[in-house]
Image (cartoon, rainbow, N blue to C red; front, top):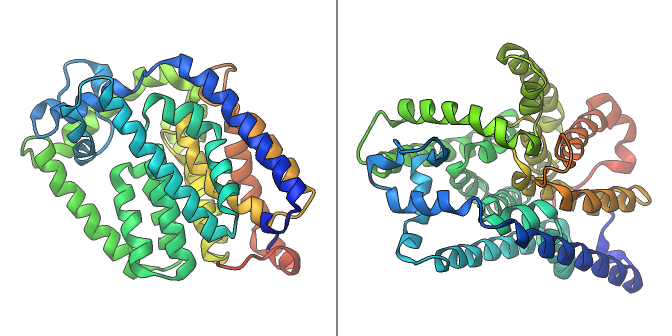
Length: 369
């Protein structure tokens, strides 16, 4: 393992100042964008427990999460604006700090380095935090599940992964990693937590046991309008193919083939690497991954920081941190982070393909912890 713990103090300070500058610049730019997404979360907190959550008055008010997720925002419904947003920000900041500290332990990083790398990452600072998106919570739960992978812990792997079902597009790639690795006990616990999500969702929509049908209709109707508005922020292959004019059969075929190809190395590599790769590949194959969802690329960024040899480590990390503040800004026809997410996923599958991995095992195979 190549770890920043072994960097000289001078080089560590150089990295630290560079990350501080990157983070400060994007915070200064990001706060000018406004709280564009927060209203939807605040409204969900006020509507949870009623049929209004499932049947909004306007298309833009569709709750695209499982209905039970809206309970997270119910306490904030008692806060007047902008105190509700401020309370949410405190929670998200705590999630980000927790994810960084867990990452420091998993990847043998200095805590200062892990905190700087997390808060200088554009999708977290200039995309998620500034508009109140909950992807830092997703990062915390994903990091906790990866910690469970590293320790071989049944509950520490399965419980965070089950809680991650608050946003299924975050949880499903990690669940797929469990499946291809034959971790059936963890999968059974995740299934139980998933059933609880369904039951709590019944209460969230006012007692409608058939809520998935109406919810799916609302979400699919909303996605067309959202694609037209936010398609330039997509990080994933399905949306990029859809914007290029491909239909559902072609997109489904591409995603299916890619998932099968990724499953082979996911089964063979060490557990921690499988969790990090699943998060990154999950972004690339997600049906809905905007700039703020790029927070889930951080596990692989931290993995690269501790496993890539020089000079590749510095080159790729510098490139990643130069690109990441540009995410979600609609400066280009596609999100600048999309090639990093998709290209990184493809590169990982190619490098970790069984024949290639055997040929390079002596120099690149990582340990679980």
